[in-house]
Each structure stands twice: as C-alpha cells, then as structure tokens.
Image (cartoon, rainbow, N blue to C red; front, top):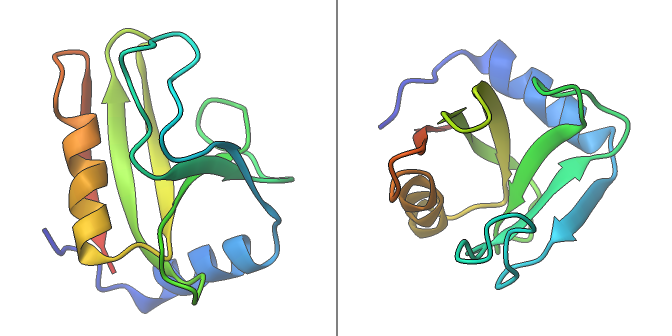
Length: 117
C-alpha cells in the first residue's frame, strides 16, 4: 500500500535516521525476549538518542539495501501491550517490507500497516 507522498515527512525521517546511530539489538533470526515463538525476520533495533511512542528510542527495521535510506514505515497496534507505534524501515526492499508486514499480521494480538516511500 502506498499512501505517503509528503516529501517533507520522508525528508524529516531521513534527517532523524542520518543524525542517529542505528543499534541492532535483535538481529535477524533471533527470538523475541518475551515471546520465544516470534523470530525476527530482519534486523530490528532503534535509533540511539531518539524517543518513540512508547518512551524508548524510535524503533527501526534494517533491510539489506546498502543505501541506508528510509524506505517506509510500519504502523503497529499491540493489543497485549495496549500501544500503537511507528517503526522506521531503513534500507528495506519491497520483498523485505512484505516480510515485515506479514510479521505484524500473523497473530491475533499484533496488527500492522506498512507504508512505502
């Protein structure tokens, strides 16, 4: 689904990502710390020195593209945690974005919507 056409939004996300160190604390193939059946299909982490919806750093997914460009966002709702967040997709191919979308939409408690750039 492609909804995002506001160049200012994407430029601001690029500046946020470029001005922050990417920290991968859940590498591809690792298990979620509280839900061992959940395996991260791509590198997952955060932008150091930022703040996201949950009060922690802004979350990111890191794909295989070398450019490091922001390629989209994933808007998520977690019914167990009772929260909603925006995850920044960095360097993700269309195929990787589809994998992220599937990750958020396989169970009854987590739902997500991906928006590509």
